[in-house]
Image 1: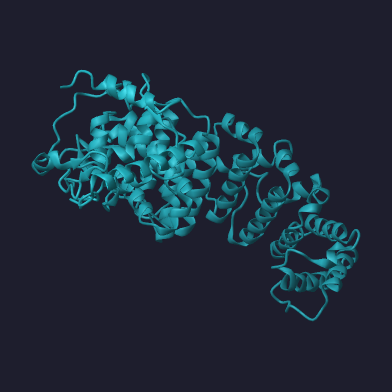
Image 2 (image 1 turned 30 degrees about the vertical axis):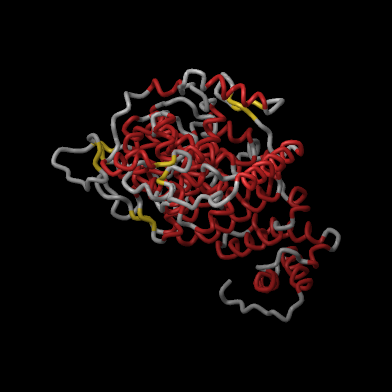
Length: 545
């Protein structure tokens, strides 16, 4: 087809008619020139008015289907499939255009019905264009998605994925196979269950291993270097795995193996920073679905004679993977664009850290060292420090409840579910919401605290010296400030007091605030009258001097 020069002066309607007539009459020169002209003019268009003429779109589709069944010229087929892709952009007509004959031809020419297909450079362009058409069809039609279970599309794509470990299939073809599997499992629960039952977890895990094996410099001791194509392949496989592990609750050999594979991807080196973020986000998203006890496979046992920086070696493990997850969280905290999208940005990585800290003791202790190191500087509020602890304390008061609860849960677990320790590191004001939610505002202790060993003394010398000066509400040493009532007469003080009482009464009557006291369950309970607060205070102070 390279011998034809596109003629942009020919109207699209004429090109369409010449394609239909040329194929019908066997006039190769006429339809090939018209195909080249059509592609040159319409390859970027989604709305082609000339195809909206009654039956014109169907006539063109039928003519191209006929040509597909007659020719073996891969160059012509690549052009024909590109035309199919342009026509299939119209969602309204997809279902009436696609037939069993057309699907059989597409699967034939894209190698989906032949395990011995020759994936040569000569066939590559044809296959890629055929896969793009298939993607368009599935993307634009819910009916075609459900039909993929019956017409063989799903099963044959899975069959080709099974060949990746033994047959050389170009990365560009693998990419669309995995992209289609991801989409199908995302939009159809029936297909998702079908892929699960077809051992999809092991199948896609093997695909991830193949990508690693084919990457640059990968070995048991060196992280893989991934080019953009390999990174994209891995991301599509990870997203498909996310779909089929939504109900994965049991630790099995397959989940343990998958976590080991994910460990390698968290250490991999994509070619750009954007690709690195994309890959690690997809890995973390998948980890949120996997059973937390399997996170132990994220830790790399230390070998004899191995030396590591002190920040990575802990209790006989190489903690580099957990360190990388922490660095990902820190990078997200420093990303200014995350402010308006906290749920999507923070919740996956926070969820992984919470689940890991609860399930694996070594992970919890390592996270505590890096997130809650011994306190030295008590002059700043916790949320004002540019540390992981500071950023997490800021999230304790975010209006995004899911993110707030995850941040509170992580800090509380790292504090061994001890209320006093939580107050020490976050300030009572930041943690009060979580305490109220859990019923820990009174004398009650958290039942989970009993699951941890006795609290060791972690107070630094600097903290001990200033402990008596720290305001537990704000979590730092409160700077001296002038007495606002200094110089006032008793009459002025009484006037300001009554004014404050009236303001509080007004807010209470309007429902903006509501007086409450702590009940036996450790949670705040509304009171009917302010005198109930006085009764509670009297009861609590009866044993004092």
